[in-house]
Length: 249
Image (cartoon, rainbow, N blue to C red; front, top):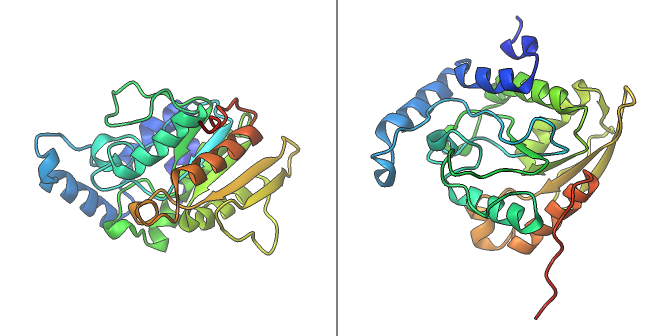
């Protein structure tokens, strides 16, 4: 059966269509329950409570691929990585290296702009316990596949946050025309893989990065310097200008 993403002509249309998806009953029930019950700190807010589209320019050279919206983050605000602590870490690092206009993203209307970079995810609804089912990942795959196909003329690099995103992304890239090595490259922080394009539209540089989850950032598994370093590498591979580290005082 055809997926709605298959008939989308551009990213404007894709971003408008993503929030209408109701293909996964468990995710629909959970995202709407969270939006109804709310967290006490946000009880006066109206939650988004729908699938979350990608965020960033439609001619991005760099894509950042996460896992899924957070229940009280993007599921509340309607914008990827906006309104939670993981997003605070990510946007601060992006701003430090010159990929974001400001170091924070609290609301969808806060004026944050991304430079040459688009943030997306393999699963567009907040999953219970941040753990999507394989069937939910597969149901959502056409959205990511079409998004990357539409970005393909300008896309030069992808930074993947976490092993789930890495495993979900590889078959999408293969279907979109990039040659994924066999055996498939393994995820790891700082891993870099260069994929050639079957149709000759240019190489794609794939980078791995530990996810910006609280578990990783609170324990020091992922530090701000580590994140800034891999962001710089990915942005440089994409041909984007970057802000270099300030010299020590």
